[in-house]
Image (tube, rainbow, N blue to C red):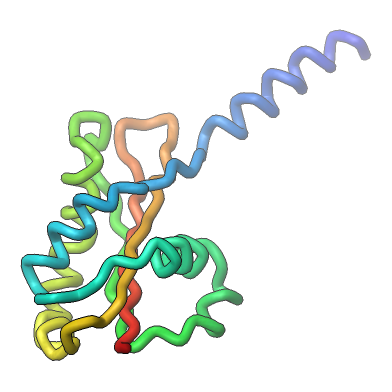
Length: 137
């Protein structure tokens, strides 16, 4: 019976280490990708926090009053070999290309925030989720 406890403790550690969420708090990368598609928008730390909440909580999504949402989730192959900015770009570039017309129509002064996280696993590949929320002023 007592021999089971160390095995159980080891199993709990392994299973919790299999899928960890790491925040992608990289404001500079999010601002850079936005500057490629938009003009004169205003970064908001509050909206960046909302973006992370939006990603993590389906219930929260319904309460967010954003005028535009651009985001996605993707499997990043060989994630250990890529810097964080590249992972974000790999996820958002296609999404931004598809939303280019809507992004260009955002008026100057629109506030926005972006955020994301990586689901790191015991493999060399990670799932990356990222989103940007926009609110016209």
